[in-house]
Amino acid sequence: MESQHLSPSEQAGTNGQGGAARSGTDFIRARIEADTASGRFGGMVHTRFPPEPNGYLHLGHAKSICLNFGVAGEYGGQCNLRFDDTNPVKEETEYVAAIREDVAWLGGHWDDREFYASDYFERLYDYAEELIRRGKAYVDDLSADEIRAFRGTLTEPGRESPWRGRSVEENLDLFRRMRAGEFPDGARVLRAKIDMAAPNLVMRDPTLYRIRHEAHHRTGTAWCIYPMYDYAHCLSDSLEGITHSLCTLEFVNNRELYDWVLDALGVYHPQQIEFARLNLTYTILSKRKLIQLVREGHVAGWDDPRMPTLSGLRRRGVPPEALRDFCGRIGVARADSTVEYSLLEHCVRERLNAVAPRAMAVLDPVRVVIENWPDDRVEELEMPWHPEDASYGSRTAPFARELFIERDDFRLEPPKKFHRLSPGAEVRLRHAYLITCREAVLDENGEVKELRCVYDPESRGGQSPDGRKVRGTLHWVSARHAVRAEARLYGQLFAVPDPDKAPEGGSFLDNLDPHSLTVGTAWLEPALAGLETGRTVQFERLGYFCKDRDSTPELPVFNRTATLRDTWARLEKKEG
Image (cartoon, rainbow, N blue to C red; front, side):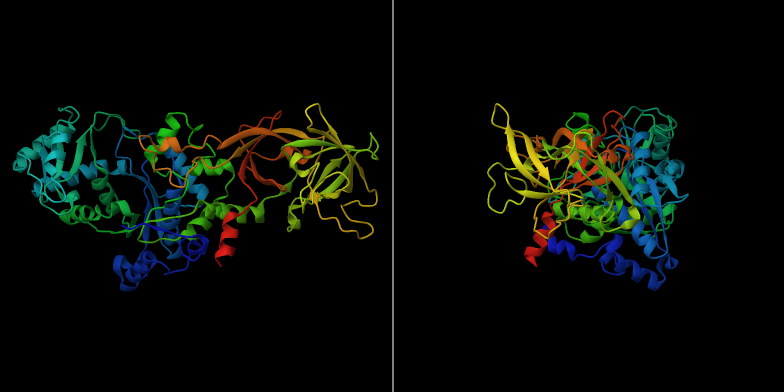
């Protein structure tokens, strides 16, 4: 389908699931409302989120989670969590556990409706025998390469297998011997008998079962034949009483096979509906490529905060409410589109601005000595955790003779409209006092080593006692009391908007941004030392940071969740 590129303002105007959803605002909800009004499926709505446990969930899955659980909730229905575990070669219990955690974190509730395709292996096998008995499936001895060669092209019909005419009795015997483990991998498959001249290549006698002598993560070695995804998926939907099987556009051609299998068996028939998958700038959402990033060590694991996985976003400090808002803003559509990454950042900032406590930290310090402050004096200054929500309470921060401020907040020769600190200039220290710089001490390389300042004793709380205008406000920490921490400054993993577009002769890996992670030291106010792991806080004037699980009592570690600059909001204002 034709792809379109949505601008931020267009994205904001697209209704969808999540907090921004409105009943009937997209084609899926319109279809569901029509079905319930007509009494189809008895007026019920029953969806499912059906991940394959062969990797961790990513942002594309977040869209599907919000949609499937969202519409079920909106229409008083239910949503199952089902693992389509039909390929034992790629599936692991680690992925099952991670998927459960991610879905629950994002807000999906499945109660006791956790199912597996492997729950139905015996019934799927019985259905396969029934297809054979009805003359709609046969055992084929062609190899995988031969099957591809016999399939034909979009302009040429395929050729029938020499074994397509086997009798029902012979097919049943061979299929049962396949199950009994008599044949090696690849020796035989079970194929549907449909039409080798079908315009849709999917319908040219697709494979239903293949031999794989591999242990399954749930069934062990009980099986050595496994159903193909397209066969197992539709029948799993049928067995669970799913009403609306929502899937992404890559399955649009497979819908004909979905319908064929159910109709050939005469079983309960859900409705498959396809929607456009999520495409995001500066982001790879191919599970195969994400696995490659992990296995080749380009990232530090599935939950590396640069990864677009839900576990990576959670570790980075992204709140689930922001992802639900993001999914609601992008909505659901029939046509592929590409969403600007800045919209996701905007949703993250908007949520964190409302809920993240504030505190002070310095990433690139320069020492400030307040000459008229006594050496032994320490004053505890009370500060609110959130400037707009008193329910967050307050904390105290020590103020002493020597402080750290950001090096970038001082200029020896300030440019025009520079309202921070410079020789002779006065600034406000957040929640503290007004200070004036009297001298900058330089080291042997001409770099600023120390700033000698004086404070106004009458300006406690940062208030000007005589009403004089002080434009600059700086954050700070007490040098003596500051807590040393590791700051991991994460950026986008890829340096180009379309990472899939590899340079000539290269791969998507050539588009990795070598500067996507910078590790430095942060100096924190003492109140942050006891922050719980996984909590996100705003370092005032610097951005949002989340305390990482790698933290120790001796060295807290903070991941940058997002900067304070909101490109999306500026773009929206400009376009408006």
